[in-house]
Image (cartoon, rainbow over all chains, first blue to last red; front, side, top):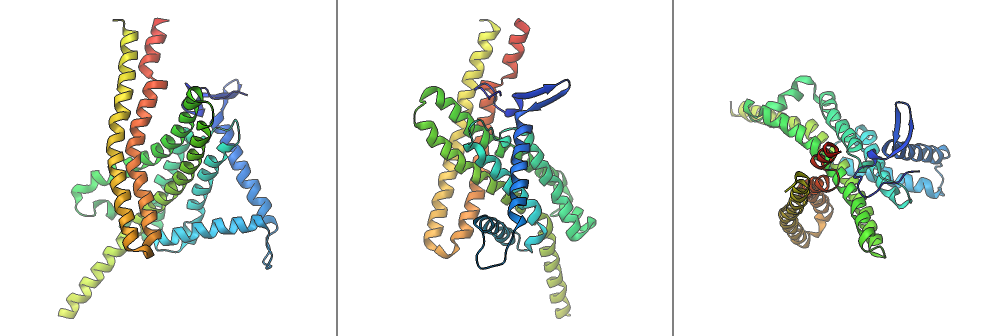
Amino acid sequence: MNFMDIKQITPDQVVFFQFHFITLNLTILFTWAVMAVLVIGSWLITRQLSTDRQISAWQNILEMLVTGIQDQISEISQQKAARYMPFIGTLFIFIAFCNLLTVVPGYESPTASLSTTAALAICVFISVPLFGIAQKGLGNYLKQYIQPTVFMLPFNIMGELSRTLALAVRLFGNIMSGSKIVAILLAIIPFVFPVILQLLGLLTGMIQAYIFAVLAMVYIASATQVQDQTEDRKKDNTRSSSNNQ
Amino acid sequence: MSSISFIGMASVITAGITIAVGAIGPAIGEGRAVASALSAIAQQPDEKNTITRTLFVGLAMIESTAIYCFVVSMILLFANPFWDYVISAAN
């Protein structure tokens, strides 16, 4: 099995297995591994759920995780969590597991590759208009691009694109820098110090997973919410003007 | 000076300057953000959860500028396209 050396900054560059035109690099391999762990793990846990007073430790952990994500979503979006739970929860749990599994020797986090993070960011980029249109219809969604004036149209579109880029590069840069700094330190002070930075990398990984999910939620919430408030204001205005008459 | 040594020198110096300058701004910004968040928590401990969440999101936004600089300097040091081109041309 090949490992990453210090000159390779993403696990994309490490070829694990090659057969004619099929190339399997470490990113794809470990993405599949994380997906398998998540799917099989949640299948095993949810196979025997109980509503007794005594529940298994695994079910307890899963319930804590799910209710925690639900609370956060409903707190940020001020809407019902059930609608966004599958998407945001999957993003959080996938990224968190990708980053936490770095404690396993030989594992390289798939989020240290720009292709994974770009794929996740593009999912957010596509889901924002989907949720927005589902919530308020196509016309009302498109209207928010010309919200203050028509002249803001190019800036709104640029903002949409640049925040997608920022989402991808932020996650990639943080995780890549964590593993790279450990690799550089192993060459300089190979004793206890890299372990401490590895711990810091675990913390950063969790925070980045949280931030990715929160930012995705904030973007979706802003696409589904803004129009409601302006509509409320319009309603208030018409009500007050009708009162005046 | 040969083009190989010139590209190597320019890459190393630029990488150092990039990360040095790119660390100053976010460091000041994050310091100010944390300081005001701490004083906000001290004044209103009840709002701790909201303040902490907003602080983390804001810190990530600020930090991303430093991360961009870091990514550029990493590319210059480890995956430099100009260096690779010169080396392949020399061979």
